[in-house]
Image (cartoon, rainbow, N blue to C red; front, top):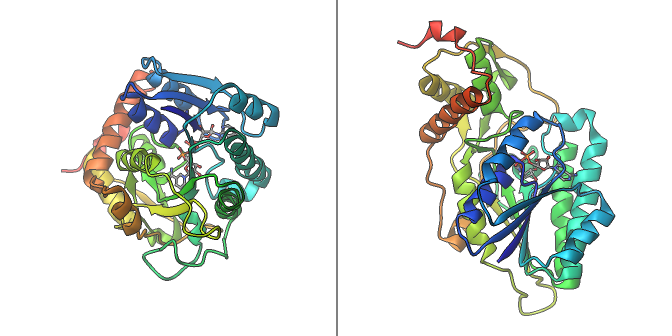
Length: 342
Ligand SMILES: NC(=O)c1ccc[n+]([C@@H]2O[C@H](COP(=O)([O-])OP(=O)(O)OC[C@H]3O[C@@H](n4cnc5c(N)ncnc54)[C@H](O)[C@@H]3O)[C@@H](O)[C@H]2O)c1
């Protein structure tokens, strides 16, 4: 099976490529523009980590390069496409709206067009829990209305779902959208809370807790995400009985058990052996207070439910963090080990 992964140097793309590459019957081509939204060295390191697999290839390509994308789809036939490349992050979207329009809208359109022209068997793409905005009813269900995004990132992700629906309806392109909920684990994203908290704890700096720490996230471990994606790849949506039921599916992909930020901090203290200092800050514009996935429909479809608990996942992340920063010659600072717990 030939698989295209967009955003392969990213957190989820790298983990998925690794997971798929372990099966020699997969041939994987990954693309990424290696942008510097966060430290590009970690993107390069993720690609290096994949270099031992003979069935993984990488091409540096920007989704917004329409001709380049056309060439890509003209040259290789893909059985399926996993579209993960996007400009992520809520806070960054406040100051850099243009890049969201380019990468997430034009880029998504270029992927849809490539899939349509080539009649790709299945397009699986990343959406986000951000689409739920300020929805008060929990857990969040894909049946809930998500017509009131509270930041531009969320608006582009909701748009991605609408665009996919149009292509499924008009051209019969099988599409599955996955609304990811706060993914974490080894090789994670430096702009996300777990990474930032860990870095600050090791550096002896305070952990910044927005909304005075009164926030919760449905943390979902990376291996549970990749397992779900691998299974969903094989479950290709088909037309319903009539034309008004296109081969279009949409699921939440979350653990289904929200965790308060203070619990995350305590879990990190356990994993690092260091007591955290906390800075309590106001709510950030565009942020969500709580996320909580109703992912039962996905579990029923794939026969798999996330099984990694927070303590295990955080410990694996911290172990990876120590190893990674030692290996790249920037050992994590240990001055705050003086305040070791117990
Ligand atoms: N990690 C999460 O918790 C989470 C939650 C919800 C949704 N998502 C979505 O999942 C997908 C993957 O997220 P991630 O955490 O791996 O993010 P990531 O930023 O680590 O990976 C995205 C990759 O896409 C690449 N990219 C961005 N714009 C590009 C462009 N124009 N052309 C080519 N490559 C481009 C980046 O260089 C990056 O390597 C994204 O679509 C994101 O919005 C992630």
